[in-house]
Image (tube, rainbow, N blue to C red):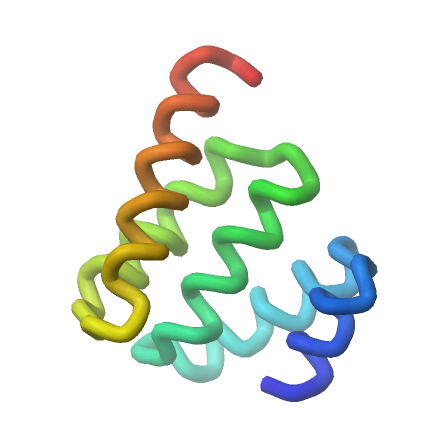
Amino acid sequence: LKPAIEAYTEGDYPLARVRFDTLSQKYPASIEARFYQGVTLMLIGDYAAAVPPLEAAAAIGDPQFGDDVARYLALARQRAASGR
């Protein structure tokens, strides 16, 4: 997770996307991988692609991430629907 988070915090969202995609495939039940995968996709402007990983994060149901997941998922759905 560390290399993906480092790319994310450094603002290298294309690299973070690749790393979170890999982590999400390897660890599908990881709330961190799914959540940050979705947020990273939002940061590069791909709101429609952000919805599935955020939905997966919501389905995991980790209370520590619950509010953040709900907020980002709602925003991704809204922006995907509006074509932004």
